[in-house]
Length: 327
Image: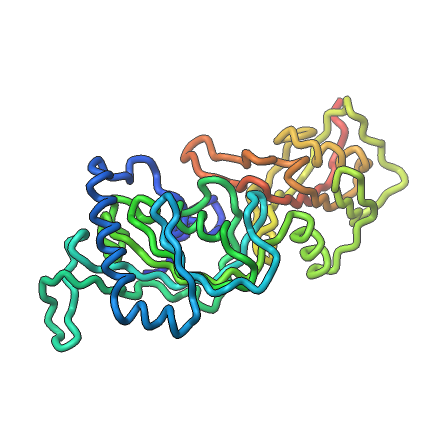
């Protein structure tokens, strides 16, 4: 199953991994959870899975939410336990086929599916087994079981996460049919790293060979790209006409979310205002700043479809040209 790109109105991967909507939760959630847990217990107790755990030297635990974790011993002191970072990871996704989701299992000696109490894991998505996923980590940003698992992991660690459907894909089948409704799933995850906003900004500047003209105490990186000695200076009370392109830093690049002409401050962002006051009419500059003077922990939500245009805790880039001061 290819991961669906859930729209944050740009190709941020949050679809196949994003959290379920409330209507996706089964009305008979309690019964489904019990059935899922039985399937998970049957699967992890199986000889093949237990042999694999032993061969990999893995230790296993189950959390109070019902998430089963089998993890290698961490070799790093860095744990992703706080929201606000961007996580980079690989994963392979399996669906558990067993009695609770009505999917028959295939026996080892036959190619014909037969009804059995055995529970097997079928690989349905390996697209990101070696290709990194970059994901903003905030409460509710992804499948609950995946989010909980990542927050318990150390950088460089590999972990198997097995979760009941209430922590995964809920009561709605995947659009391609590879994950039936109410199915427990397994994620094999490698957490590569977690990046703070400061790290994202500094790495982006270095990768794009951008050298700030000034760096303010608020975290604004101001990069003047066109200067003039004759233009009028912008004041806090000025009404100006500008051209701008607005982007958010994601993964190793910046992705646009708005490009238009507007007034002094289209989004009422402190970082935008701060940068604009450093310009004269006719000048151009790039502003790069953290979410603390951007959209903060709430992000920017499209009023029409209720989806994020900018995820919470995301650094921003604005490329700005001052056209005129309005009379």
